[in-house]
Image 1 (cartoon, rainbow over the protein chains, first blue to last red):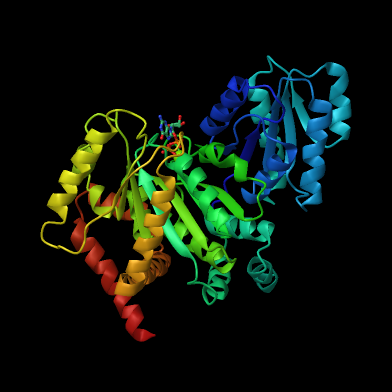
Image 2 (cartoon, helix red, strand yellow; image 1 turned 180 degrees about the horizontal axis):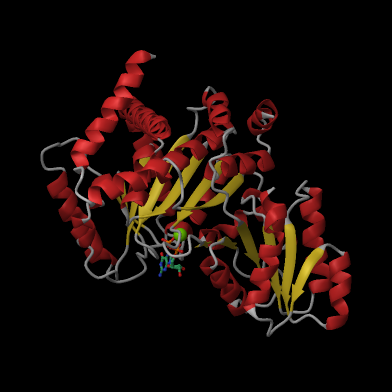
Length: 134
Length: 320
Ligand SMILES: Nc1nc2c(ncn2[C@@H]2O[C@H](COP(=O)(O)OP(=O)(O)O)[C@@H](O)[C@H]2O)c(=O)[nH]1
Ligand SMILES: [Mg+2]
């Protein structure tokens, strides 16, 4: 048996800046994870359907445009609706401090703001590893 | 558990299909029973391989091909294979980006796969994933791999029809010939036909194919000029794929290929099973160090040592 962790990196919303998302994707690849990348401007529905088809363990959402309070929870909702209870969702981007606890209540397990060292993202994935591999 | 997932797969349940492919990728013990159950329900799908250098436009072409095949009411599945990093074992699988407009379409299933770390080889894992998709009722299954690297090219041995994509601007196109890649193509696609040099590439390909087909008159490979970005030549290509498959069906070539594919699979399964048993019996994992020590001190020689081990295995084999 040789389970590899699969992570979907997706960009919902309208902004076309994917440097951050690509940087995270590369770092995850270098850490030995399989990263599926969707490209920019994805609807929550497309992200959820992609996560199911790709059978990923994590979905990382990246957003700069400010619609995170609507789009992030919508992805979680659609995933759960499709029966994917086990997929762990995290997010990153320009997200004000005061929105973070709201997002966490909505099932986004971690939120990374600009300037977060990439190691923190890797530690987060690592900390969930056992749950994912079980 | 197996019965349940098999039932769901046969019903076309996306989550079950996706899960099953993960079982295969992760080489779960239940994989074998699953594949055996599904096998009886396979053989209906047409399987196309698309290969060519990175950046030649394979994924962009697939996006366009899916557009047309969808209109005919077909269910389409794509397995897009990208290389794993030899250093970290990780991978970035980005083929989907070009096909993402189909992500929410219930007629289309797209799955990305990393090339390395598959027991029994990439071709083995791909062949098993194909069975899941075939049994799930996809009419057309398309596998994308880069046309460099032995493991990736091997995958093209398990499809019905191979599209080889070439483009201008890659420098020495004739390189492809040297690498033996030209041999595997059934249909040649010169993509990026919107660029000036595309015609020259076509002339080169025609020349090489002329050499290849010199001694067998009936086997001439069709060549299509396409532009995935400008959406030209795709209809002709799709029609060409269809008529080539039909010819293959009529001439018996398709049946022949599928039998060859099964033969490859059987040999692969047999070899890996035998290997497992032998290693288990000889306890290779624990004994390897000892054997190496004997070799390092020149107390044994490699062929002699292995012959002795093989004799042990055969003796045990006769007893049973
Ligand atoms: N000019 C031109 N560019 C194309 C064409 N097809 C694809 N491309 C571009 O080539 C690049 C690689 O395409 P992609 O489909 O990812 O290639 P792949 O690596 O073979 O799957 C992208 O930037 C595409 O937009 C084409 O027909 N003409
Ligand atoms: Mg591609």
